[in-house]
Image (tube, rainbow, N blue to C red; front, top):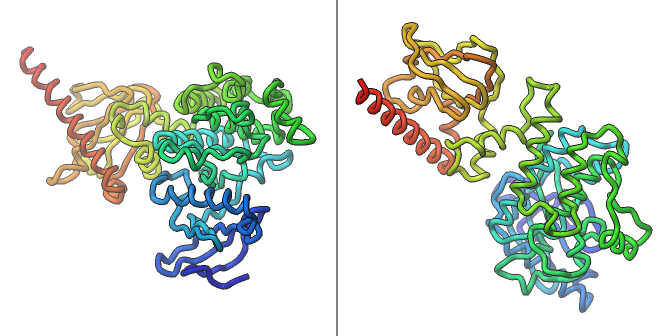
Length: 426
């Protein structure tokens, strides 16, 4: 193995396949570990395959700096010539979901749903940039930590801007292809929805929804067959997961999820209503994201900024009568009501009632004159509270902080308008 590739130090081989080898490398200038995918020399020397795979590397290289999302592998650099092609990417140490797509090594069901939900948000982000992945499979989804994922390998992607280059037939893994893809029909994001449905089925059961001895039979089943229900291959799975996988994998486009939001919504509802009903003390990332995304305060936040906020927010269930804030006490944090109602009072006199979506306590964070509370905030009933500390907000990205401060202005303007109405009514 070479010790260097361009400016990058090669540490060890991470894996290889028929067309490329991936190395763990080191960027000495950025001082970070990277993954380097290198095209196999034999492929590049082949007159037909060489041109095809050079185009795939060029296609992926064209996305440098565009796919900035917490659940998409970042592409840092690329070299594409006649003699060598390589892509330099973010290094993700957790391996791929391939390791959890077979019996005996399956992940917990609620974790599978959470990972698939994060995939829907990442692929929706790509879709909004005009990008359809076209090769979604467990081997292209990397595990980052306990419950995060990173989608990789956009070489086969279809882009709105460069469709002439990326419309390459025969690219992808047949077992995960949609009926439209195997028949080489026009493709959009719904082909990725189908493929992610196959991945979800496999992660839940350890088996593919269609199994065949060769690619020809696999293609025939995809076009003409009826996929197995997950619960038929793994008894005891909630029926709602059969419904979600079935709709994602619907043969006809009109029956398939029309948008990533619709797919993600059903996953979030499954977590909220079925998978966590016996675990009320827990908050899955799926539920957290869906909750913040639905709050008016976060309407102008991008998905990336919401994921950022989730990283530094604290979530808790509180019992009736719990004091969230006390008049006269210091506190450098603010909160949102995710569920339930709270009472705001001063010297025993009720001032207001807070309900789902309301923000409170922000004055102690944005005021220049200290962070002492000016009222009591008590839970009227069982409630769910999201807490964000001032020091965490200060470390957030500039765009994320800007949206929080913009939201605070909207909250204060609304309160001022209500106060004026009450004064006018006296």
